[in-house]
Image (tube, rainbow, N blue to C red):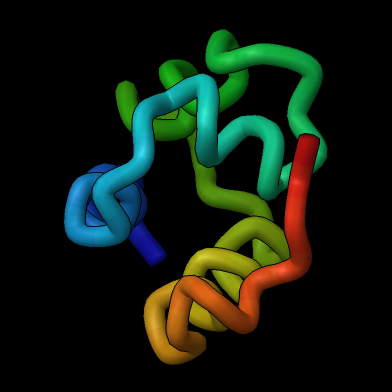
Length: 64
């Protein structure tokens, strides 16, 4: 998954940088911004994003 694909996936999920940071276990949206601006997307992050894209939102694990 490229940084552009990551950003497109986040937007298609209707999530802000802060919201996706919670689902990915990042401490803040700073890491999300770094990935969207060109850092390599970690494999584990790509897998989670793909899961979120194919799973209905009501079946996602609830995050605080």
